[in-house]
Image 1: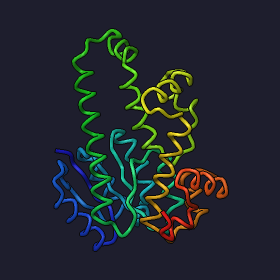
Image 2: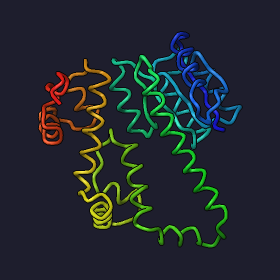
Image 3: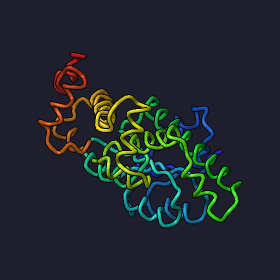
Image 4: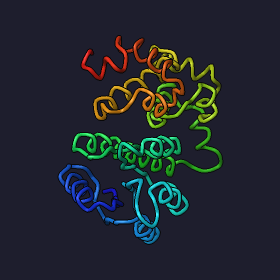
Length: 257
């Protein structure tokens, strides 16, 4: 069972998220709630917590500052941001700082379930890896095991990493450095297991996320979507979007899919 805390200054939103979480058949227990970031931080300092769900804008200590402080106390803590439409720029920055994911207000059951299911799966995978590593003997055996890891296992880790960083602008060199392999090896792994190039794969992830955002928040402007997904130039984003979906972002909003 994983332990979670919800930090949200709006009582109706807090009650809604808490009720939705409790109705889901997930191994997650809501251990505490807080109406401001400072109270949430004090609880996390004094108690073991696996998951933090926090609003960006809160009194005493905002969500981003809270996450930063929590990293010092509990580096393994997984944070999920709760944000409104006007907070999208802050959300993008936070996601680039490796926040696990975000929830858009009003928080609905479907999006909450999707994020929490992925988060629980991620925690379970980490737990299994830790248990497996603990069984290994010291003196470099863990490092040797890492080197012998199959391409399929590495591809699975690459997939997860890119999914979590789909809002960032990552090159194949960035990813190769992260996993201590060569860019050419990453390229071969993607071609072998996804039958796509690295660039094509990452673009698919970004465009799929763009489609999800358009569905959730059709009021978002094309420029905002472009910046959120680290495209930089909205015209380039629109061009890529049409290449992958067959329609422009504006046409997609209008139901031409």
